[in-house]
Image: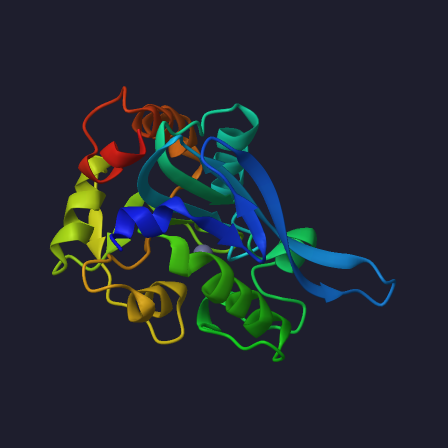
Length: 239
Ligand SMILES: [Zn+2]
């Protein structure tokens, strides 16, 4: 079975999403002492034609709200309408941190140093496990949004491993002012995604998007997923 045919059948946590459908799938992470369930939402947008699967993640660090807003706005403004392929959008991965405006989980764990996670471990490890087991295996390409957060200031840039040609191609597609050759850190999302990737599968790469580049990024993504914008080779199948 080709990768395209595999991508054609999308099923997350037992829920099937057919061609042309748009669905919200929740992954149950844990329950608060008040019996309030904490879910990890995955927005799924499928085109009618077969194609690659693009995963957009933000908010692995709960105080890095710019990426969260980028993905949220792409969803609410109805920008994610692939003709072919599928887009999986997760605007807030670290739900706990976001609720507390904190980088880490309430137990002090850094989600981006807790991969690949475990089913019954700390909250961070559970979130990581759900992401790695239910979502990442479906994706062909991943973009993980980060920002400086509350205590850091970063110039807008793309981080990836430049020795991987596919990574370089994807990074350049955004025409960023700078691309940082960033090695994969142990227990990070990027490294975990790389480890389970298919041989041609680029690891998830990340985009640091401080406030000033929110606006420019949205039309780039919007045009890319519709195939009407500047050539973004890796995304043409999603258009
Ligand atoms: Zn971050």
